[in-house]
Length: 103
Image 1 (cartoon, helix red, strand yellow):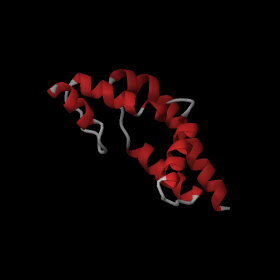
Image 2 (cartoon, one colour):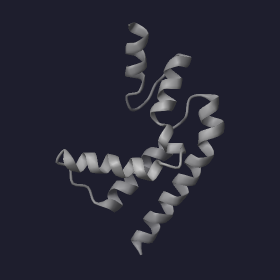
Image 3 (tube, one colour):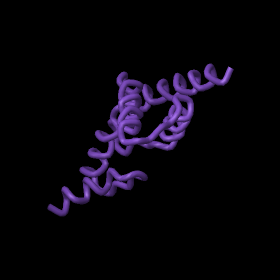
């Protein structure tokens, strides 16, 4: 039970996993940052926030998303080697979209 509790706690932001299992769970929790579905997931998160009464403009949401993804680190070798390249692409595209919105 304690291991499961620690896995859950380790996914809180900022993530602070200690054991390999906690690192795996944290990377799984943030898998979408380094995947093709990043933009779909981030829009679903924005929609969830809106449905809960939050109102954040698209540009501000994208800026916050960029700050978040830039500050994120994968904790396992798998995440670092296989997810970081797509995460970097997602950051660059996100940055490009924000720049275009500013013009």
